Image (cartoon, rainbow, N blue to C red; front, side):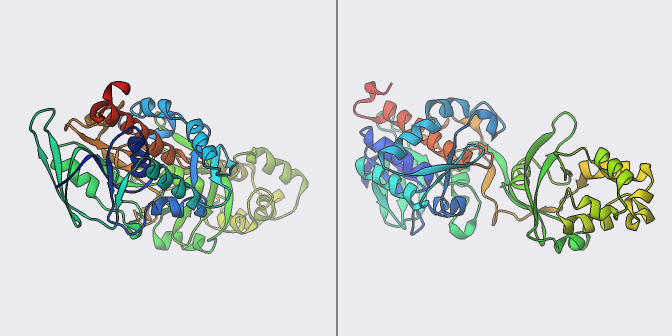
Length: 416
């Protein structure tokens, strides 16, 4: 078997970055991936321009059974560190919204950067190459190693890094391989679910709103109870099957099946005061008045389907009872909907859950199984929409690479 210090399974953001750093720290590194192309998730992200990080990152922007787990890695490799790497490679970028950073040209620039870093580190890469099996041989601290059966032959290594991602977007190669390896070595898993994903509704109940597909507006969106409410102020997008847009993707990571979501359709307006003023000065239909606050198509549909107005719905606003207008204002500020599900892994940007952080070192990402590491999306750390998941990929990979160097490099004392 060909021997390496480290084998990394997965040629995505975390895997490639870890390989480049580890290689430049003096380790002999091999990267395996079953796909023909590297980093397909980078390639399609951010509309093809890759939202590669966010200027404002903290552990508060991540979901995990242990919310503090990500803090260590994130503090040791920050967005500013990754920006320095972009500057080194001459990659231009811009801030688009709320600290979200995108490539000026193309997501391919990030992939080129990662491959260049791997080249500098002398990293060997095999693609497409499938992992058929893994065995651990415990011959003591100096002789312990992993033996891998692959579609290109046998490989042995001192350390094995799993950077296989989650279940999201199977059409670009997502599999459950990382979870299966964790199970093989008796490591605990947190149940997985689609995250950053559009939500869907009962087809019949949603029919009146399906005609609004493509319509977008800013909202306040919330879920959870009084003690655990999560809320975002972002854009909402109507679809044929339900709701999407940044606000819905954000809340989907917190939404629990069977629970509802709450929408404030006019978060910047005191709707009750607006309607009372309109009643005193206008003879327009209520839907026409609401069209000053909401897109007109939504105002017409919403009044017809959701407004608590009874027969007053088609009357001029000056004829509507105050009680009905106040109820209308309250409903606009708190429209409650119960999704029946989501668009699933096929449209989910990430997978929530994964390898339980209780089994991992927050300093090095090494598991309780000696020499076995997990980084990136396969771990139970899920970021918000807006570049946070890529920053977790860079930070967890960097922590892992330095942990590998401290333990397995010929010059380990330099990294301790």
